[in-house]
Image (cartoon, rainbow, N blue to C red):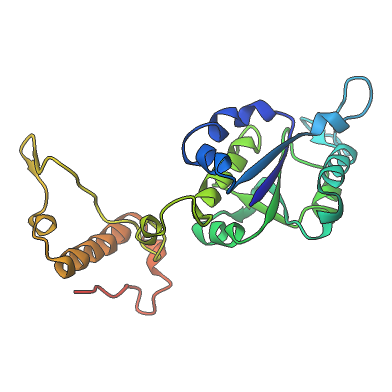
Length: 235
């Protein structure tokens, strides 16, 4: 899979892309990430990519010409078939289900907005989708784009063992159950007996009950898609 990221701060991606699972996925050829500097298509001697808003108001707006030029040049013939996603606080809420959807695609373009946003003509005639990672405003779309890359990269076949993904939070619409490892006793705190029993059916039932209870306490909104408002508790 390939991500084309359009930004005026390519350096902000050095840490997230050079470490851990994402970096290994790139090294193994499972993930390709191209960073495109929008300023290379800026206007004038100073490579300007923004201007004051028509109608007045505070701040600056990213101009349409540099964004169109950068994206059309980078995508070329693939422009019509590549999803072009704008990072925007007014966008659709990013979720695990959207991440799974994106992970099935061969190529995705991400636009990192800045300042007071982008010229509306970019939204109307270039962008195919807008995504937000939460109800807050970042200084720019770079961190949001890095989050999306990280989440999607984990779902690309071969990046992470499939069994590790099956019981994660949100994989079945519930938050994940508690996890423990050695030692069995630490500062007087014990690992639940059922996890030491070796009885796989009982362990599975305990984990399911824990997931339901944790979800009910922390994210009851995740339970609303069940017909009776509660997921079945397997035993």
